[in-house]
Image (cartoon, rainbow, N blue to C red; front, side):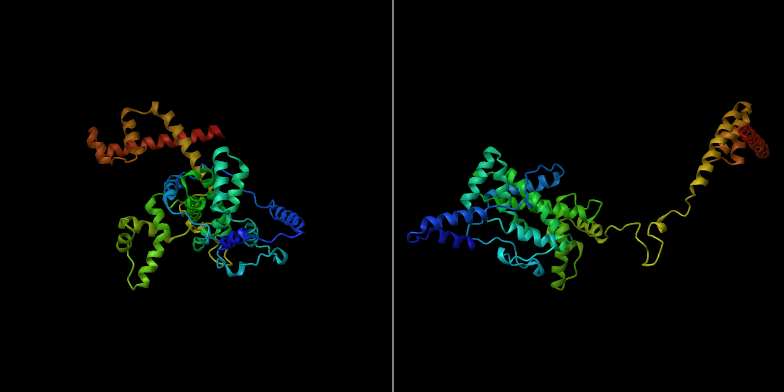
Length: 375
């Protein structure tokens, strides 16, 4: 709406006066002064190779935007005043309010950048498309920063800070400026909105859990629409279930059930105390009760090493039948019984027991010798 008024006033003829040159000069100086942009907001075109999932999904959607009707100059697309009532500030330079809130400061800042007309945007976009002029890219990005805020506001209910969502959306905007083709007839924001949404959505899923919960297109769709569908069914008095939600979204029932289970629990720190005045953490009760203290575990390892060494030295001294007892009963993970060994080798059960006792005695003696030699 503001743009239409601006155009009307620009085409209205004014009568010439004697002071017109002075007024024109003063107006030109004031306009030049108004165009000075603070250094606190700097945009640059970046190449984020870590966003492969975003590039694959949003790239194809953004290409479709070239065939969609673009917003005209008279269509309103501005920062929503109702995003946060406590942060809707009057931005008159002469009566500007000061705040330490980074979001308020950012909103005050980006409102200084005027929205480009279609002709101005096309001229700048063509200049950047052909020459990669960074100043043209800067102008395109700054003129569309307010649109990023509008898109980010749609995702504020997912629990992340608004300023963080805006920052991710700005990265998507810069990516869109780099990829935008002005000769296809669409407005930049019509194309860029897909990249802005893609970067914000990717950020939300990264922040939701350390374990990626949205790796497929269906999972991403469920991440943003599962709760919405549940609420809609509740409002209609229908009990939401996986089969019904899946049919409404066109997603298999098992995938709906799996995603609901993934989203049911959030990450929790193992260092979190169990109570306000408790010294016991969640990690303390997760430990295995069979875990040995470190000193005991080291001592056990040392004894095993000594036993292996003693057996290796003892082998040449054992008879054939004693070796059978050693390998098939003493050292075997699934030791044979005395009866099984006796039947297998044609000896009595008692003979096997006596041989086992002799072998164990020799092992103990060898272990004693090893310890005496170390002492």
